[in-house]
Image 1: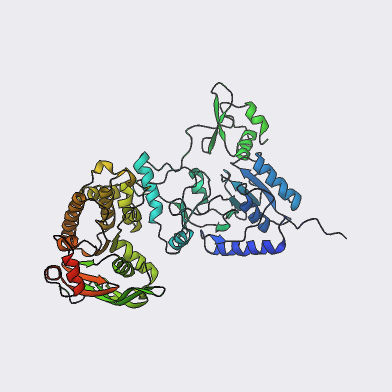
Image 2: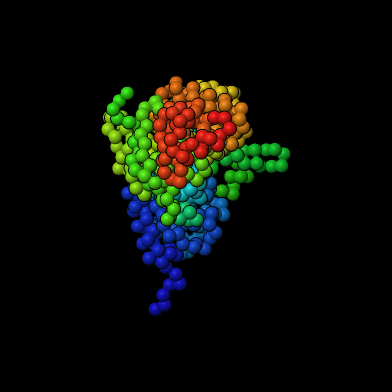
Length: 294
Length: 258
């Protein structure tokens, strides 16, 4: 009998074991960045190597995988990572949020509320929320160890001083479990409230920076702010042109060369489900709808 | 005056490899007192100051600080979080070069507000008001609150650094050549300002300087260092007018008109 060409889910068992150990530690200390020996993946750094390694370490033959990139199931990054795991792990894949047991994501949290038992895996480019303020790793580690997070508020202070409000609209820093300040990866601040006490397990992998961190189910995740300038998630003031949804995060799409624009749900699965259920937006039937989701 | 000093340095020794930079230095600082450390370059003044602040590990001796409960605690015996908390609330360090003490990419207001935010203040309007008041106090036009310090002159940067340190009302301020690198007229304004603030706030301060005029103007007492040792100490006027140690005599005599 010949051996398979490569291990289940691509990574060898020892590597997966190493990553699982890092994950266990990360879950035990919510928001704490655990160093791990990130491997080379058959994909460039910055394309989701951290998320893929986490997914490879937790996926089993019975799992159902969904991969999204900016909320969409049909973009290059999402399609190629989904196909990668279909090929190397033989798992079933889906575009439906509710059907998935593992969702690997870049830049979004699905609109459909996650349920207990689901795992959300984030691809993280820069795991250190303090990095732009303090370039020394030794110093940021010390700041985390001693919970010295005044500097983070200096950044928010500057934002208000310059623009009159906190203009940070993605990768908005959060305090996890009342202890660690964490970068939620470049998800829009609109999605931050979804992390708070989510029933799903949230895992974060940064391949190039070699860090793993986690938010266990039902953990407090609070967006940083000032008493007199509370956190306000940002969203375009419009309704989805295709499904009419007003409560979702929208992408602005240029639709022609005459300045035509259309706001559509960034979560393609959510939008398609709504249209299937009969919801119609102002631009329903637009060609844009044909290419995606359903 | 209480019977316990605010700061007590006992037998402090700092080595760089085989070179001894500070040898058996001992002094005490009382609340509200300004102490100047003078000496030529390389005499160990700045090293002593940095060791007192905990930036350099001491190779011998101790630094003791009076906590709020009145006990004199050795700093190396305190846990690091406690020490760092003290360093950003009750102590201040003014660097010779304001670039070392300021965040050059952050606005003046952010610089002054940083220690407040580090101390847990989370009300933007109040932080802003406090920063405005402190800018006014160090004679910087509050209209420049949102300008980054790199657009400030050297003297303004130094005043901003002082505001940033004093905003949490520290009990102890360590200054390393605060007037170094500034031209004479700016120096005079800055010294005036420091003298006023120290008196108003009842600060205890240690000022390292090679300029005897600075010591004369600001300090109640002074220490003279040579080759890593404290060779003379006493009231400022006494040391400057009637130096006892040959090196102090040389130092005083070498100044044109102190």
